[in-house]
Amino acid sequence: MPEIEIRPLLATDEQPWRDMWQTYLEFYEQELEPEVTDNLFKRLLSDGFHSAFVAVNDGILIGFVHYVFHGSTWSIGQVCYLEDLFVNETIRGGGAGRKLIEAVYSAADAEPEASGKVYWHTNENNERARKLYDRIGVLSDYVRYERP
Image (cartoon, rainbow, N blue to C red; front, side):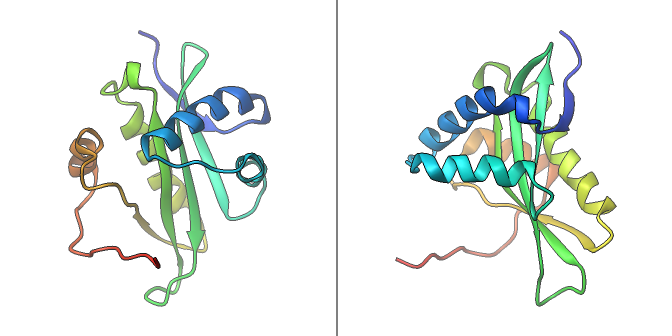
């Protein structure tokens, strides 16, 4: 099997990214208006706060990670929120997820305005992903609430 390459998202990745994004949304039982996805893709390609890496295996996109830097009341430097992580189901367990998270760790360490802190959320019942997260992260004690 060829080595998994991690690189920034490119404009030419749009269709395979959209296909994976749709699968990701279906997993989380979410539906977005097309203009939301259009806007997201544009933001991921801009030099703004949102950024993305993709995992490529043998020339085929197999995963993505989206992350965003933001200010914090508990830090002088910005913190990094790993917002979305997806790896094609047919290749999960092969190291792509870990490499994508590690790429975000490296981006957070390299960002001069950042504190190096990276955090993310997942559904409590996302057992397969949590096996990776338990090896590469630390489960916090915080409980997340949302506005109804």
